[in-house]
Length: 261
Ligand code: NAD
Image (cartoon, rainbow, N blue to C red; front, side, top):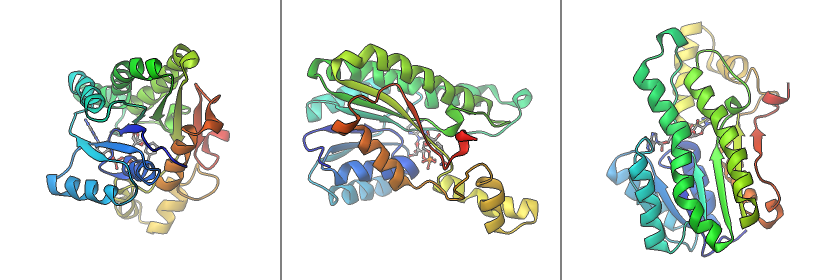
């Protein structure tokens, strides 16, 4: 698939799922703006690596997804540098697992800001250009937790359910302008964030790392397989294809059957 001359912003793409999606878009020859935190030299290496994958241009924007002004400025800079923002992948996200009674107030605000409000701010900034050009794709990386809950993840589940409603609403507003708005709802993905928890959980529960994967992390994932970043990149690219022109407002599970049960 070629996305030559299309420009995509992937938020939170210095790691994990966002990085995998940025790679997929770079391979499809899109111009890719990556974003997220990290060491300057690691980010420079990532930009250089993405540049080898396709024929689009790659750049980095350091916008903090909890800051509405920086999000709007990122869209503005990208439009000035590349001429358009055709695709936005709202991927940046953070998590905290804590009972609701002791959930820290600042963490609640931070998770709602990054996991939910950021998608509003980027959409608000990028949608006018998409509508004017008659083509656009907004892809929100939600979660199985955008469709079902788990205990001790109140802020995360609230934000991801909010994304489900936001996705539907903007899909209706944008429908006649060639712009689709969808969410992808992954199950567990073995990103560095999740990998780090495996030895810790094995030690805490006195079980093997294999048992942690099968009986804890993949307990709800009926395929007993982790979702891969390549599968999520493929799903995002599909949503940008002509075949997906009439798919809008959906929250698409990529979760090994988790939310079917
Ligand atoms: P990750 O921790 O590997 O990557 C998160 C990225 O977001 C990093 O690049 C980080 O720098 C960036 N980020 C964090 N705060 C930011 C901020 N304020 N401004 C800009 N960038 C910021 O996480 P991941 O597992 O790749 O998760 C990515 C998305 O996928 C999240 O929205 C997450 O909720 C969702 N998700 C992950 C899983 C999973 O199992 N890993 C499952 C379902 C959904």
